[in-house]
Length: 133
Image (cartoon, rainbow, N blue to C red; front, side):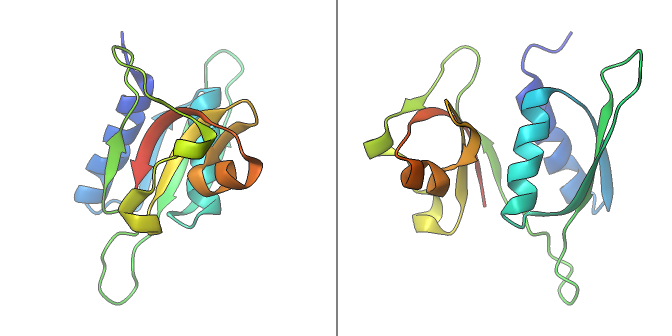
């Protein structure tokens, strides 16, 4: 039994990047799918694929992105912010800036799972899920 599936998702990504894997498979959930879409839209991962089984929850296959010349990963840091034991929320006026705007914060809002920049444009706050840079 996993008590924090989002932390598990981020840890699997972090471990795959450290091991220089090209593809990582992660058990799927709706929140993980939305986080994956945000990572793809912001250019942190190369591609993704949702494989749904009839009897199971399905898996997410993520193709990680690396610099073709230096072989450095596009994601250098993944940090879980809001945990099950201590939730972190941010108002629309107090949204966090990650690495002075070079990274992103992924938020769960009433408009869905979006990045901090989109939340500023929409003028909504919400639960800060993680920081990515």
